Length: 477
Image (cartoon, rainbow, N blue to C red; front, side, top):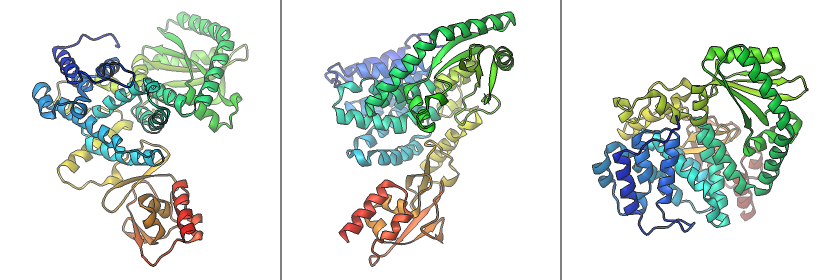
């Protein structure tokens, strides 16, 4: 499926246009700028994207950085490519307006989400942006240290979770690990070394287990592929944080992955593994019957071998594996919708139910463009699992940590608003400052010039940003 596709006439035409347009421009590495669009093209090809997306990937920086216009792109490559380039250009402009590292991430999340709604008529915009970010993350070493950290933080906070939300596992792992190596280089180096040492120590035992399993599956006449999977550095970092840094609790540092032809073979293989080794209680997960939120499907089981080794197995079909690796990008390959009207409009049919938020996003965007009202509370966009999204009465989106209170919201809007709060309306009804905000709430802060900040408000705040602003206001007072 990842075989090298031959460039079409349109792709070659796009490469020629981009090469001419970026002539004389260089990257921070000193290389000609065209290296970047060509790298984005290669990534999109590896993900199995359609021709329009690849063409737009090649041209994604031309409107912003050269004399090429959207009209020209529309004329030469059609409406669909022009819309994709326009969407990516808008995303780029928002990033350029953010200078201050301290406020960068919250602002980026707010604006990124608004922009997702604005460009949500075509999810391929986000896939191009992920490819663009992946190549930039691979070449971060050319940037000055402060910029490296800023881009790496944004990658960890926004783009890796976005890849995860689209179930693009391979992209998520690479984005997160590259970014983490700049955000916390010492921790990254320590964990990478730990993984390598553990992997080396267990290599011989793992080969023996692989041999035993292979012999059993051959005997049972099950077609299969088996390979090792090493846990990524950032995944290990997050998992250790959950388990008080206790490595003894990490059972999936190295896992064996078995790919079989169909779902029946998945369950049959798991049964055979359990006849060979002892399954660990509470460590069997059936993500085939109940997929993860992002559509991921696989059987997971952790077993204790005859030599008392603990090993995790992941069992899935080829299609499940492609989807786990490339996620939504794989849908473009499997659904073969390139000729349908829906596809031309940028909509994907037959999405797994857990990815229906994409369809909701597209429908909301279409209504907003037509000037219709949208019930944003019904727009379930769980892109950042630990966040809630609440709205101002004007419909601006503000993201806050779960458990946030009205004063957190007020200080996020502006420290002047936060300092003069006299009350709050939530969803049109008077409420109090102790009420936890919920995803989708419309929050109106009531203020008075006569009100002054109170030290008792420190008990009604959970975010560091609001706490800092309130303390500053109290000091001034």
